[in-house]
Length: 195
Length: 181
Image (cartoon, helix red, strand yellow):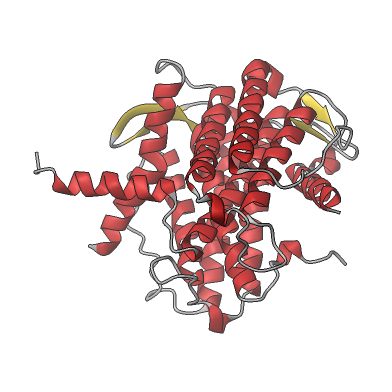
């Protein structure tokens, strides 16, 4: 029973609800496209990270679980700067060509704004590329990829850092916003009388 | 230094996007790109499963979350779940519980199998298969194969990210973060 309950929760949280949200955000239910799919996945990761950035207490922004790793703030700056770099590559800038640095410490508001902008700019790049653009080759120094591969890599990068921060939350005795929302939905469903 | 780190990380990510492309030097289609990235991110989780000390397999950073072993089993179970969904099946009742998968070797094996089968499935679908609509048994919301596998690959990435911190709080460096020899 516990297993089937957790399976149902898993399905709902991970598959159904994001897809419902994505469907509401994107086109009417016509056949999805690779670009629409990428954009939906990108926006899902973006929302999860931005929600964390907005939610996490500013006085814990410099928290790091061990001395040698990035702090909460540095993680978010890293994601934002990687997003900018991915968008640069997608727009045809040479790898390593863009001026780039992980900036000096910023306030929470500055980091939230930087993160949001980086995700929005990247989403705009995906959208303007469209299916045809995403199939075009992008030449890197040693190989050729496509925009589709580039943005899938970028989404994985965001997901991995989201995963890092989930544990940062837990180690601070906090529940990540996405998990809190899922727990709340689950509670409400359990309170509804069976139909 | 940090700039260098970011740059190197990005290059490694991108290298992995297309490692096999050097054989053909062609531009991969979507299913091939997806299969490679699936194998890459799944491979990082497998490397951890193989590398992490078995006596720490039940480590959890806080009491309410999954242990290292439970994370691995959740990833493997999730991979099978997405494969079922991609075929329009109701997810199987495969129970990937710690009680059933007792040893490190058993966990590594089921995780590996799930990643390999996922990659084979994506390649077998090809671009045409991935463009087809996927119907979920409980939802009217349509998606297609690229949407489903985009979600699946992000799922693995998120758990990899969690496990990175499990490593660090144990005073260990994740295999992918160690200096290359």
